[in-house]
Length: 254
Length: 254
Figure: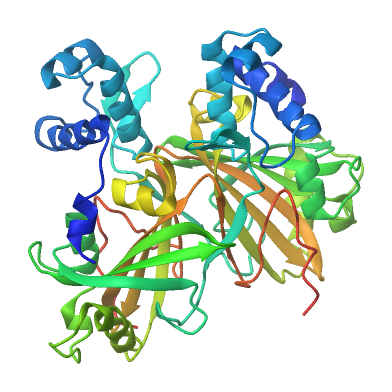
């Protein structure tokens, strides 16, 4: 056991190139700078363009590079720490909530969501679309699903603009037992991609949250975060961000 | 605001194919079944192989397909819910810990880790390698970094096999103020890829944890989870798993 174990692993060619490129990004490029085109880069490093492309894809996965439509490949800024939880004991739409509701419809949710909520497969639920910005950038989009049974006090005559806030307001009148979340890799659906300024299929981090009240799931949300620019943070303090490039100072003793 | 917004977005050709393939996976294939080769699939759906490949890549990102070395492309089982936290008030190596230590070295950590720990750039720290299995599969690998200052009671004469357990034991004698985590997308380094039975560069979920004690970061870990098979769960109950394909029943009222 030791570093010799690491060295014994055969690394593919693009992997070595990735390391070399990574060092070049550190020493020769500024954040936001546009990389030379693939032909020139391949020539400089003496590799085939297919190899170069694989290395660039890796660096994009790792958040070092960004491909931007109409711009090219640029050096990415450090990922933003985006606090996901816990917001213990708080419903969506509470005062400190970082999300903004942009609309609400009544619609039959995807089968997996109906299963999470325990609703019938053909039952329409209130579906609040919310968005989240950081530093002027759209970083996440969310659909919050609320079965009618969770918000019985909702009046039947709502304009679309009143609908979202009424659902969130009614939800907050319930006692919240707790919530739980799951994070997984996904690919951006067309409508989310557009909102996030990405191409459909771009890697995203999908956070599924269940809100428990009165012994059942009173609401569930599926949030889609840009995987290229976001690092999701979870912790004792919602304000605490773990970031590799610009580490916070250690917490003060309590 | 409504579903019309969704329909107005132009979807690329492979995106439609992905949807069609997804339905075919549901109706015609069993979990673990090997897909026909690309030539046959492209012919069946009347698309170019490049389009097919893009659609397959999307389905792999979403956890529907797995590419397995020497086997081909198979229909993936539902992702496993892997509980990440909180294990409030518990150090790594506590009784219920799902990780197994496999070795320990003293080594200078990567610069970002030294910054997290607040150690000097050239200071060696105890580095415990740990692994995590679920259902007989290796799902994650971790490096836990512990500065010597956090474990002053450690004896100087340890065999490699004693080293890891001694570090974990000493750590547990400290008061734990709390921990915080960050989740981001990464690509598997060669040594992790080997352990996880993936190719280098495969998408992984990287979880960085800081353990706070006495007003400073007493230890930090960087864990790498397979993104194709894992869904990371966070919640009030470590046992609770959110899973799309096989939803748990709602929690009982407390």
